[in-house]
Length: 108
Image 1 (cartoon, rainbow, N blue to C red):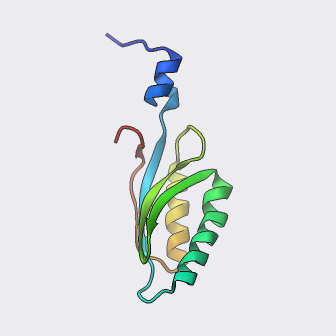
Image 2: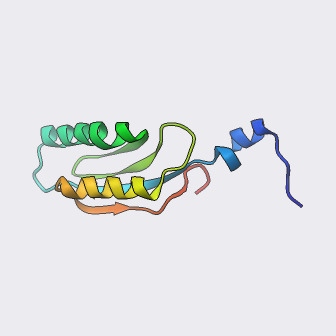
């Protein structure tokens, strides 16, 4: 028997129409990359990929970075978002680029 939940509860639980799909990402800068170069590359990444596509990035690192990418609003990232992020990182000299499959960012 299916459980019926109110819209308010579905929103609190981040389920059904309030589910959010995102993906994990990892990459590495070349050995010896300066802090200024890391900062400028990340600023460019945010300005060229994250912001224009309505994405949000939460992560950290220095030469090795990892984080989570999701939408700035409730919704689902797409396969195109995954490809866009991976391609941008690879074409800007990042190595060991890994992009996970899409997953529920609240429950997985």
